[in-house]
Image (cartoon, rainbow, N blue to C red; front, side, top):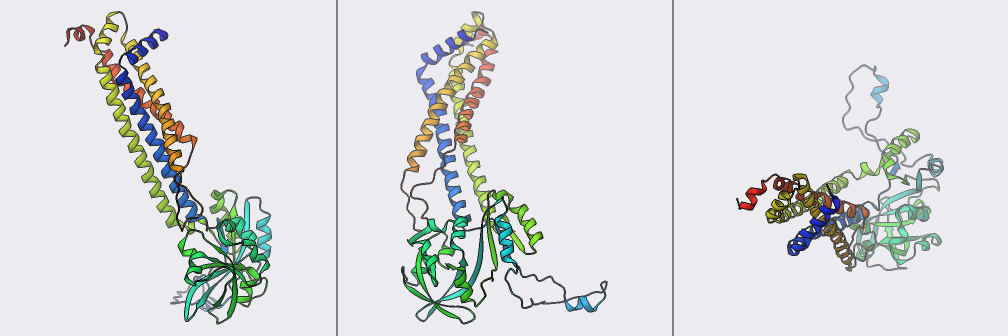
Length: 418
């Protein structure tokens, strides 16, 4: 096989049928461009939704769980092998705090796998708005540690996160809750706990997470403020939230922490099982649409090259009559297919990038999403390599099968017009 001669013949065929060559190349171009755009845009949207939904979720949540399956008085007075049936067992009154919370915090902070640790004490409260009481939650935290885990400071839309550090009775209030109370920065709000304790708090900041359920019910306060609201001492903590350097370690570490500390440790996958299922289905639909798009483009490319080769039957006959073997003929058209695939693929990558970039510059404003100002598009080089590989493989296959069939035809029959 004379490769330079094969290349020259392939180039001559492509230039002599420029219109067909351009059409075939554009088929590859638009197929790859639409693939790049669709996968970049849909993946960007999916990641935005996942990030927004899971941004308020810790990787591991440690707390004192109320267990219904626990020893009863019958276990103490009856033999171990006797039948004991207890209905409607009620939990005994016990404190919900982590008794050795600060020791656990020190252990977790020294763990090299842990990115951040934040203690938590939350309370259900009623926000008093005239004669109306609005149900909500106040979370007592170390705001600087909480920021490491959930980037609270980035979600502040009025005031500053640091104002909470210098205020004994200050709160950071969700935007939706502030709107319900018709409250603004530096306003004082009255709250009442289920135990009947009333307190006046000052709004030192307003935040917006983009999650309606949080923005309409939640406020942040200093840990000491919530301890005062609940009339607890300074060591009273009920929860610990963790962020890991690698969130994939959460499930295994949660098991270890629960065994070592004796408290319930819930990983983020368990806590968000339902949401993760919806993410899985959405990703499945995304890839199904993209693969369908690629298959449609592949059949279009095949039809174009098949017709191109069919119209060159006389050229094939001449080549075989002048001494070219069937494999040489196949090589000629394979070379044409690779040239079309490479040229169309490169143009497709460029066009796909330009479309994706243009979409990423489109302004996007939503009251519930403050962390984006343009349409979400993910630029990943992996998609571009896949697109180029698809173009080369598709055109190679599209050129191979019809050219192999054409190479087996008797040149005498082609010249006679049969």
